[in-house]
Image 1: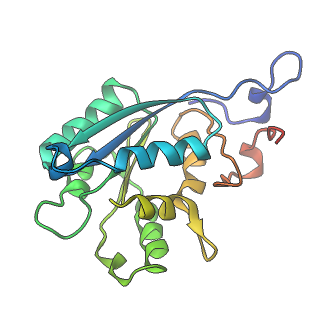
Image 2 (image 1 turned 45 degrees about the vertical axis):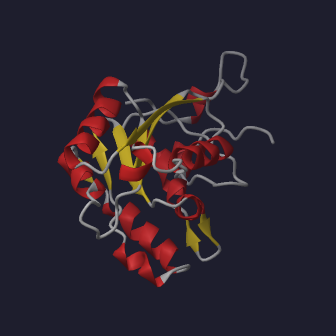
Length: 208
C-alpha cells in the first residue's frame, strides 16, 4: 500500500510532485447501445465528468457491452486483474427489469461489498425522482480496485457523483477509499467535487 502522508507529495526541492496517474475503467452496459441501435451516452458522460473533477492524468479503459451477467463479470475481472485499473465505474443495468443484471455481475467478482455508496446514491437520486428506490446500484472492492455501479442516464451520473446542496456526492469519498486499498492519490478540483480525507491523510493543496 502507498504511504498516505504529506511528505510523499513533495520532491527534494520542496515543490509539489506531479499528480499521480490513475487508470480508470468505464463500462457502459446496454443491449441496444452495444448493438448499435442508438448512440451510447454513458461513456462520454463518465469521461467528461471525471476529466472535470480530477487533476490527475487519467488513462481510460472504456468498454461498451450488453446486459449479460457473465460478460459483465468477465469485463470487470479483466479491467481489475489484467488492465490493473484503480477504479472501475459502470453505468446502466441497475434497475428491476429482467435484463438488469449489473449488480449481480458486480457481486460475482467482489472481494468485499461497500454498501454505503449505493445507499448514498439512492438518497441523492430521491431528491429528484421517487423512482430512485427502484435503483440497485452497489459498490465493491476487488483486489486493490474500487468498482461502483452508477445510474444509466448522464444527468443522474453527474448528480450522484457530485451531489447537491442537501447531500454529498459519492465521489467525495472515492479518493480516500482508493488510498486505503493501495491506489494512487487522487486530487480533485473543489469546484466540481471536494474530496474528503482525515487531516493525517491529506497532502498539501495545489495552488489554484
